[in-house]
Length: 452
Image (cartoon, rainbow, N blue to C red; front, side, top):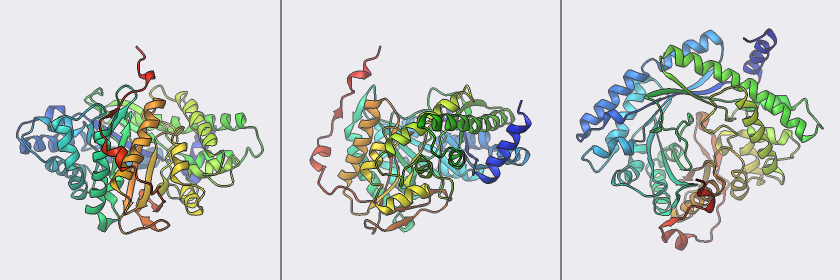
């Protein structure tokens, strides 16, 4: 039961501190839709998604209106299509992507995720077909998001897939060049991907999940930033306590919305992902939180330590507010979606090397990074390999969402629009990684994978 002080505090967070529910995502199993005939399979997919998620948007809008809590995105995630499509006799999976896109538009959601494959230890024929279909699928659909898991702590890193994805990202950029390579903003490469992530572009409905679930992603960098304005000069352990208490309040709001949406939609309640997800709006930035701890600019020395404190405090506060915390849950650092990160990148204090170090302690990884359009595919693959190695060794989720910006050079800006924001084109190392990437094979799992 919420007391009057807690209710007023929540109203203040919503009205003045950018608190919102970043997404309500319905996960749907499509395993029952497999069919050797691709047209029948696509019809089953469309019908099932529309049946299960047809009321998702309207229900979320009703909750928004009744509770006064903004829900920014309504989304759908589905079983990785490489599993669903494996029975179909076809060489291209474009039709599956088009079926997903059509269903998402019919349901009125913002995005649909799950044009995905899990290839951490090897690739089936279906996985290979899905990877080959990604550039065309993302260029010929509007709402479909894709993800590929190339590594895990238990399996190691599939370097054949990593090598292929550098080429796929380059081709996707070329096919969507007229839209500032927006196809690349809808493609994530993971290590240690989780099955219940509600955030795009990496959401998919894992095979270990229920038939359908509701997963909610909360946000609130602005709330944390505001809370830190009252702790000037305090010790860092006191700062951590303030962030923990704030994360608790943010997560309680997400728990309320998740439980209500699940009840109204007669759907299992999955998880609350308590990640701090920034937006391009001023006052809604993770970078500004780090600066409020005493850093002159995000990216300077001390940034990784400050981010580690933030990420840990968010998790500790959130798990006390919900018994169903999951997804990624921490702090996101997507450069194009965070006005403080953009400012730091433009100053030159935030670069790819520093971002890579920060990903060791944050929720995901190199997210919404723009690089020069002439960056070689092998360099992109090497960036993915570095991030996957961090995830594998540290037993955490890491990811890369990188945009080789067509006809752009270091220092230029690329506009994504909406929540995707705008990204400064960041320099990459020009020394070649081609021979390393061309070796292929698999980087074996590290010793800590032997935990049984």
